[in-house]
Every structure is written in structure tokens, then in C-alpha cells.
Amino acid sequence: MAASMKGRSFVSVSDFSVEELWQVWELAARLKSMVKSGQPHRLLEGKQLAMIFQKPSLRTQVSFETGMSQLGGHAMYLGPDHISLGKRESVPDVARVLGRMVDGIMARVFGHSDVEQLAEYAGVPVINGLSDEEHPCQTLTDLFTIYERLRRLQGVNLTYIGDGNNVAASLLLGAAKVGMNITLISPDGYEVKPQYVQRAKADAARSGARLQFSSDPDDVAGSDVVYTDTWASMGQETETEARARIFKSYQVNSDLIRQTGGIPLIMHCLPAHRGQEITDDVMDSPNSVVFEEAENRLHVQKALLALLI
Ligand code: CP
Image (cartoon, helix red, strand yellow):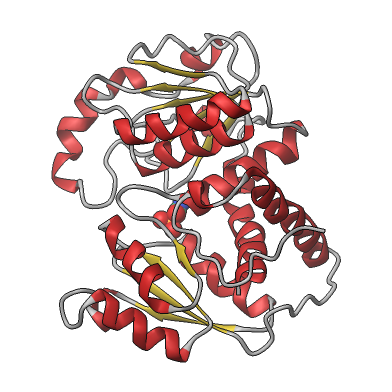
């Protein structure tokens, strides 16, 4: 029988073992099928989730809020002006107060240490809904989406092309954990931070994942999955124009997809900047799973909530 994950936090992909990742995905598949067939699944009846947002969101807010409601609980939105995390009140004090009133916390923050501190002091499960360093819920969902389509993760060749940002860092950690081969292609100076490469290498040594790093956008041959993300993340708005010039040749377009030599799944965590990091024809192509990926945030995070709270 699988060990209970109750009371645990999910701040980084590294927080879960491979077995725990599969526990989430197995429950997510069951919950997805229950929603589709209209079966009730009120696993969190009466439970409360506080959602702290320091940044904008569509998918994260709606998926957690809808998810809690479908599970019989309730989610409350605490926006940037509500609690001014770390300004009006220290992060540990916010954590201590919320932990006495709610059953779980989801936080979207700038500084990764803020979500780590929330997890340290809240006394209830804390879920990272994106920090400047990682986006673990996105990776959890991305790997689930790939498994749904390809029925395997081990040995799948995933190419991430673009900025070595929080999404790329979590994807690298997740791929290394499950034995998925990953190639990260980023312009010089925009690679994933070395600490994530080191952590991923340790997991890859166990799982057999092949990790490759390149600055050449032509290094896409043999990709089963091509993944991209915005060139300028939230908080980098002043760099948008400069980055558009630097990343121009890293656009996921039909020429790049042709160079894979196959028909790879197309992924993007959204929001997409059509005509920049991805073209309309690729994003709307039959092999694009970007909107399934978005929908799966709901199913995967519901499983996460039900297992942790
Ligand atoms: N992918 C993602 O996290 O979307 P939002 O920023 O809209 O939540």
C-alpha cells in the first residue's frame, strides 16, 4: 500500500519520490474520469484552501478554485493587495496565522524563499503555485499529459526550447526523476541555473534519463515532445524587447518542427505569445496538446490537494 502523503508540502518537484509522483498521477486519472462521468468525489468536504497570489494568473487560480469546489471544499483568493506578503506582515507570521485557520495554502510568489518559509511555518500543506525559481505544479501536469498521450515517460525525448526559467528548471527536475530524456536549448546566458542541473544529474544517474544542453536551436532531431514558454517571465517585463531580439531564432515554428524528423507533441504552459515563442500554425496543429495541458492542471492539482490535505 502506498505511504500517506497527508500533511506534506509541495514546494519543488524534488520534494516527491518517483513513487509519490505516480501516486498523484494515478489519482489524477481517476478524478479526471469521475469528473467526465459526473461522479461526485467530495474528498475534501468542508476543507479550506488559502490562495496567495503575488502575480497574475488564469490557469492556477481557476484550477485550484474549481478543484477545491469539486472536492467539496472552498478556496479563497488573497491577491497582492490583500496581505502584502512580507511587507505588511512577515512571511512566517502570515504562515502561522493562515495555518490556524485553513487546511492548506497555495502560493504564487516572486521569491522562492517565501514559499519555502510558508511551508516551514504554516503547519499545514503548502503548494508552490509558481515562484521565480520553480513551477512544480506545471511539471506535475506536463508529465501527466505526456503520459496520457504516449503511455510512457521513461525514454521519451523531450526538447525544451527557450528561456531557462522556472518552468524549464522544474521540467528538468521532473524529467530526470522519471527517466525522461530532456534537451534544454537556450541562448547563451539564459540557461537553467547550475543548481538545477546538479540536482537533475543526481536523479538522472538513478533513473537513466539523458540530460543534454545546447544553445543551437537546430538540435531538435528525434524529439517526441517540443516544449516552449514565454521569453520574458512575470517580473521581466522591462526586458521584453531585448529578449525578443535574443530569442528570435528560438521560435517554435513549422521549420523547427520539420527538423525534428517526426510529429512531436507540442506543449506550452501558457499564456502563449503567439508569433513570438510559438507560431499560430504550430500552436493550433493537431499534435498540439497545450489546451489539454491547461485542463490537466485541474485534475492533477485536485489529486495533489486530496493527497496532501
Ligand atoms: N501556466 C500557468 O501557471 O498559467 P497562469 O499563469 O495563468 O496561472
